[in-house]
Length: 129
Image (tube, rainbow, N blue to C red; front, side):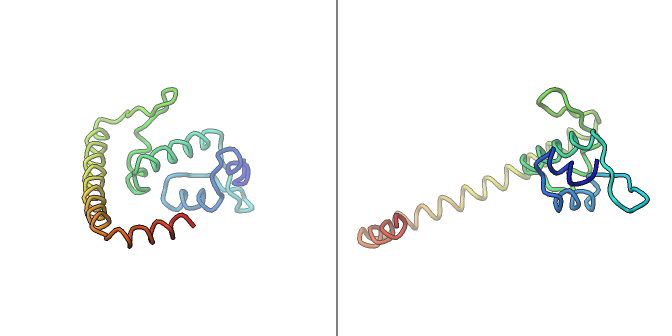
């Protein structure tokens, strides 16, 4: 199938599919005309990529772990022994990011709470308009 059909079947824009190829996540064949030729299995690969991106992984990490995953119904199952260590490191990185964001959120909450009532009313008026 050509890139337009893969885009339609996965809901992923053609530009993103090309980007996935640049990042080494997709490996379409090339026709003599130069057009990309995708297989049905690429539909599942794109779904795996989207799932891993939604989990907070970057494309570099996904390129490393994608060959070590298989689909098992609605979940991805690791098939390489080294993969679990990599996933634990990624999880720790994401946890640190969440902690940093929660700290930032708390600091913002403190600043917002310190606003005088008249400033708060004006701000809420602007937000509600």
